[in-house]
Image 1: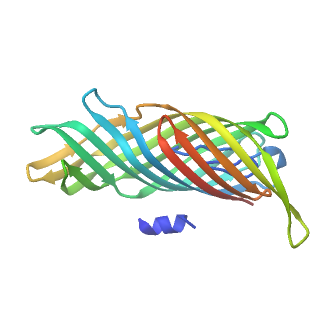
Image 2 (image 1 turned 135 degrees about the vertical axis):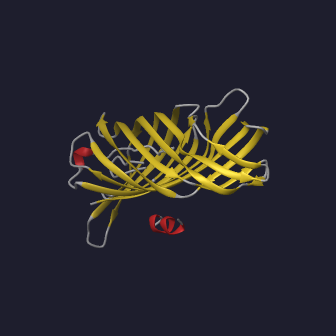
Image 3 (image 1 turned 120 degrees about the vertical axis):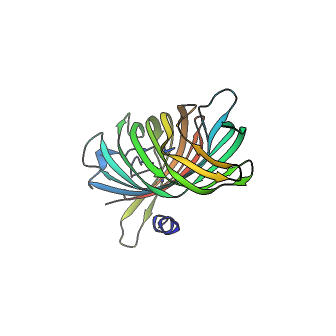
Length: 273
């Protein structure tokens, strides 16, 4: 799937333009009152460094890495609400610590999944408090299905890998932000282009799950092994904060961090038509 990464590297919402939870990044909506265009396109790259999954007292289950990249296409013709779709790639890595393996007892298992097509959609919007402050919301869903690329149990790599795992996330978020005009550029055609910086802070609810659609199986010297079941996020509520930089009404760049429910970072670039 390396070609997919190259293609998409060519991140969730924007207030004045389209901006930057699958752990998906959060969409910061556009300012509807000033939009003359009806569509916005954005690419979002997100890296989750860790997210704990619910497990029994004796076990630990977590996503130790989740790489995602999505193109987002939003329709911006409605006031206070803009529907959007997302398409791209996703690649998770899962780590099970001290998990029980039949006939073997407690074992540590690392599962690296292949890159896979990821898709979903959502709805975001904004309510202006005054000329500079806004309240935003976002609701979205993402899903992808993955086969195992590598499974390591107690440091020993398995062979004959098979199976499918569904990764999906629902999330809803509320944000508060303020827009600052930094300066105005005079371009060659004598058109003035304002530069804006918008810091924002928000809270979100995220329900992330890993579910085996077909049992994950692999072979070791001791025989065949299998993994099945469903894992859910251990913590559902988290905070996010970020900076959105706009060049006029068409171009946006964004950096966002997410905390508490997961440790994650997203970058985004968007263009409004």
